[in-house]
Amino acid sequence: MALRGRKIHKEQEEDKTIEISAQMQGSLTFKDPVNLKINGSFNGDLDTRGTLTVGELAEIQANITGDNIIIAGRLHGDITAHKMLVLMPTAILRGNISTPKLSIVEGAIFQGNSQMLKEGGPGDLLDIKEVSKYLEIDISEIEALANSGKIPGTHNGDVWKFEREKIDSWASSGKLG
Image (cartoon, rainbow, N blue to C red; front, top):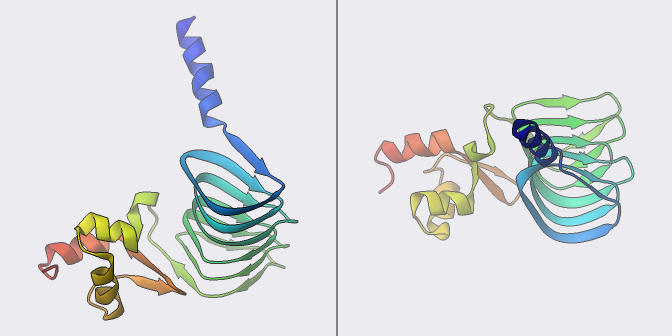
């Protein structure tokens, strides 16, 4: 009997769904996996785990980082999908994308650059703040190294992204300091 109660509790924890149909702005971060669906408008930054769905009526201006991202509405901003990005036929995306798996369904509009990543978890791709903390080097120094091509990273718009494996290799090669 006790096991059955634990099983139900676990299933309830895994099925966290949040739907946003209003106008929102700011920065949202979800540390735990959720199923997030946005049908309204959102302006800001979004960092999520689990599945993010941008509905057909959604109007988004944001940089988004997540695991699985499905776009059916309008989005202006850069996207990093750690597992998969899908652009549905009604999607209009203006921005740069980084993902290991990309599906663009006929009818979708994509204007920007794409970078295909090695498949990995969210911890495998770092932003400039995370690299600074990881290597214990000031952000301005990391940015200078990245701009000069001395540290491996990719620049999409005004955002730097770094693959942890390449950073580890770079640091162990003695180029760190």
